[in-house]
Length: 108
Length: 123
Image 1 (spheres, rainbow over the protein chains, first blue to last red):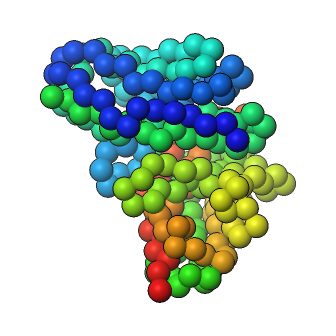
Image 2: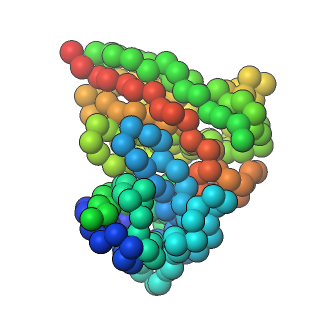
Image 3: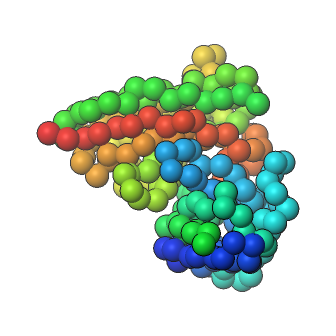
């Protein structure tokens, strides 16, 4: 099955812009979805279909995709954005879901 | 908004069995595929299994194939995960999750998650 690779940790100064990336060749066929997870909580959906935000997710969150990577960008990071972020997609068969290893975002 | 509530977790010895349940309320269940996702302590998310809305198709991660069985009872709005031949590496919080679209949409976008049920495999 295909793998998705994320940087383990990223930091950003308060109010600045940060991009969280996810590398893999899955995105040639399948879209990316992003989840946010805070300690002790279940994941929550923050981005899907490459650049669609669920209701309630601030518009400072945006998504993009290229041939072999997907990105989640936070423009003007806030303290509450400090979380773990996971990308996900499908493997080449389309039958299995694949998660990236996760990126821990620290807002300084 | 609806919710998913997992139950059935606990402590089990290596080689043992456990069955998890996920009860859906206040949201449509019977026309949606359902997934199990797990998270080992301090680790990332790992997809476990999926079952189609009618139960006719099931797929598993290689790490659990042949040991775990996913099933559902649409009359009870409940999803199950039967876990046999448990190993220490199966220790994790197990989440059930529902995609945002129904039928055979094949989505990996989960807009509903349960709170998780902890399974600990230890002697």
